[in-house]
Length: 410
Image (cartoon, rainbow, N blue to C red; front, side):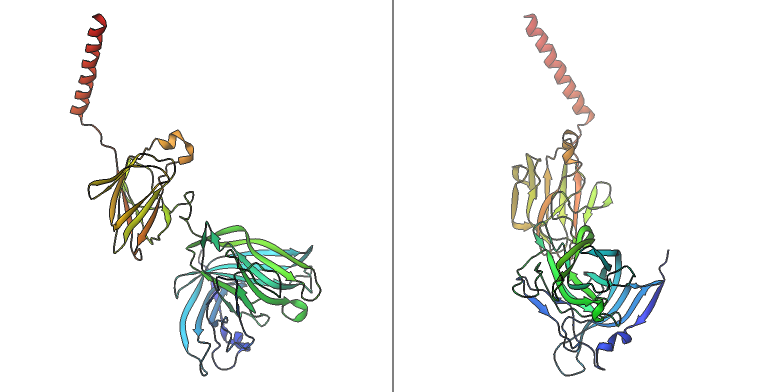
């Protein structure tokens, strides 16, 4: 079904701004717990994106389907220079209704995943709507909004923060950092998994919504997690220090563990392809007796690591056996790098002997210059004896039987 859109001009959103373009762009968050601080003046707020147009879902203007923006320099004379332009296109969204904080319903939280045309990266969006229903608490306050899941299997995803003004009730992002601190004062210790965004969303103060708070990341994919977003009241005005976590979208990348490898596309029978290569990931085609593995472009294989359970493997480069007893969990370094190698001696019967193996043979691969390269795995089946070979084998077995009988008679 085709999705119908309606478009809102962002001119109404610039009630915050003067006639000059507002300043800001996505700002990379420090890896030490430090905070990136915004400003009340949008002309100098490094975190504030200059939205040019906002398209929303027909029948629900709370769901943003496309946002065109300009990135503006934060320094220089007015009007400041445009440093880039992009469009955030909605990939997915979720709404958690009637969030309960400290035993009371306070409002709704909206969760978005966009793709930025400017660099093709994922952008996670978060927006709250407090006190919009009669049974919602009319003086609820939120000081911190959190996003979780920015560390996976030892990999820390990048994070760059920004915010957008989407209605006259929106409030800016005061600051953002990689910390799980719930305090309005004091140190903000680094937490790789958590992004904290400060605001002061409070219906009784005339700020019932948050702006659309955005985090851009280098994660390749996303999934729904049971703990993705947090809403926290920090006790700024004598309230209890309370918070709640809700499900939503979290960054994700396949290949970071042997149990969640990158899967191929099937180019043709017995041939498997991988694109968008990245070093340090597990790659996994179906399991056969062996593979002839090659990489394109300027990429080279630097090393491989086998998965536990596969022993007595043979590694061949340019027709030469470079390792004839490579066991599971062991690594081999190609010095110098190579563009192709063969690995044979895989036992396809392992999947029936041990269900834990399934039909998988994952390898952890490291590349050099993998940008724009692709990888192909071509299956090598164990050689099948020719009919004449079978005849010789059977004849030999028969001869052995005759000799054995003669020895018994003797």
